[in-house]
Image (tube, rainbow, N blue to C red; front, side):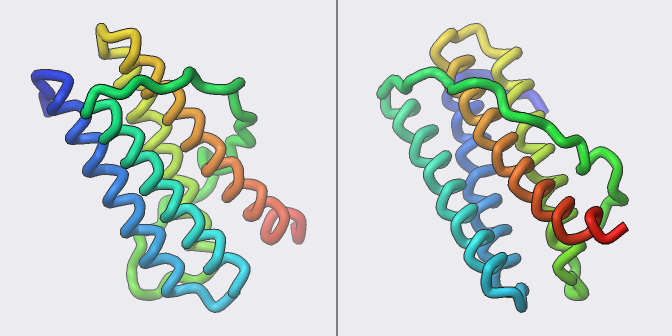
Length: 150
């Protein structure tokens, strides 16, 4: 895929954030554990926040730079890929969420590196760090529930 200008890049990122929101709403509907249902709904709202940030930049607003880097437990790198099919238990939902956040982090990192706009690079770096925080949340939950048992 080749994105030709800033508007196309922002539109692409906005679409990905809407898809992420819809994904987390769907995961929340599938959860039996009320705590994680709420976590997934919270993440769905955060993804809408990312979408609003991107839309604001597209409308000409500037944003503040990202905070410090986020810890990476790297659990997502070592679990088997899972498809978000109908049979999605809690463990599989966490794996899918970790992998999705890892992909979002990579997307924003790549967009940051590819843009010539310092403002967009700052925005994409900030969004990459937010996605890294999301991944870390799911990795910690996975570690607490599944890896601590072994």
